[in-house]
Amino acid sequence: MASVAEPELLSFNEARCLAEEYAAKLSSTEPEMLPLLESSGLVLAEDLLADRDFPPFPRSTRDGFAVRSADLSTLPARLRCVGEIKAGATIEQSAISIGRGEAAEIMTGAPVPAGADAVVMVEHTERSGDVVTVQRSVGSGENVVPLGSEASKGSVMVARGTRVTHATVAIAAAIGRPEVAAYRRPRVAILATGDELVDINLRPGANEIRNSNSYSLAAQVSAAGGDPMIMPVARDNAGELSVLLRKGLEADLLLVTGGVSMGKYDLVEPVLASFEARIFFTGVRIQPGKPVVFGEAKSGEKLTPFLGLPGNPVSTMVTFQLFARPLLDALGGSKPQPLPFAQAGLKSDLTIKPGLTRFLPAKLSGTHVRPEVELVRWQGSGDLMAVSGSNCYIVVPPDRERFAAGEAITILLF
Ligand code: AMP
Ligand code: MG
Picture 1 (tube, rainbow, N blue to C red):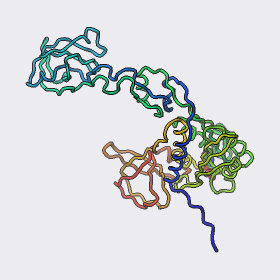
Picture 2: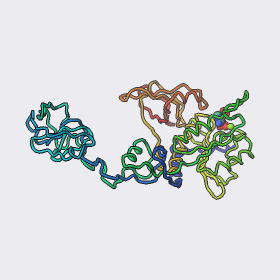
Picture 3: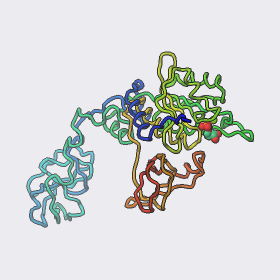
Picture 4: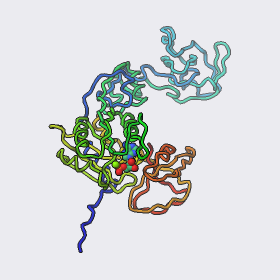
């Protein structure tokens, strides 16, 4: 008798590409002006332009003496010290000019005077009264950052679409921008489902558990530049789920956790069908997170992307990172960013059943010369303790069974 085969699930790569391609077509939220520090973690909605040349003067990178490098062709060289120039030089100091056989004492961050083309470090000099003896030669330009060499006035220092980091904040500060334009944080509705769940300020009954997923997701959403909205828990009942899903679809992105597996009370997909949902994938060959669902559905005229994340706490976390991040990037005004994969040496042998791409909680340690990684003990995708004691996932491809200690293996950083 012919059996009906389970539809072929997508591979991790196929599912991730699909999410990235979908994300690239989303339009971003609208820009708003924000105090500089409030823009941290959001995406720039304007180019940050240099308001002057950077550096605005030829800058000394050392404490020492500004010299004409040609004067140091025979060593030791004896030069006449004609003055001192500190960072934030006075008018008199910046009027100093260096002639043949002359030098000026100079500090890090000070403007290199006219006539000088290099700075010799104080460690290689000896001073006695007005005479400075130099023990080492310097090449022309050594220890000097030329005027405008980092950025010229009017040039783009940080492009629109860049996520604001501490380095971006430094540039905005350096160009005198106490406010910048950034895209509004995308609003992300978070809907946990399950009859066993109680809110965290209630005492669970004997067979109940607290709703931790809504909170871990909210933390992940905030860290990804989104604005999380935790909704009331939906019972495993189509009517209640339908009301809450409709409300959740008003957000920029809807994340549902739980209720997407094969159980009798996994109602998310069937109920979403009544919102003209288009499902892009349902199930991916990964562990944890295999039942993950991705699609879009209508709230009024608006199409909203949604992800149904499996309810096991580690599955929820992993599938958020794998599939929700690119959507948040795009809604928030950035290109979908690549996942932060790296490599590290395995601390001990690893044997794993092939077939799925696995993301296993692990601990990265070791030194910069030899980063090492090992699995943390875990009881499967419900084990919160395992992730909280880990700092990355070991990524096992679906076609490998055995890895030897010492071998380089891919990891995914949080
Ligand atoms: P489900 O995906 O609904 O089949 O749930 C899978 C497992 O995750 C079950 O053991 C649930 O009790 C648990 N779970 C589901 N939702 C949550 C949640 N919001 N917080 C913590 N655990 C959950
Ligand atoms: Mg459930």
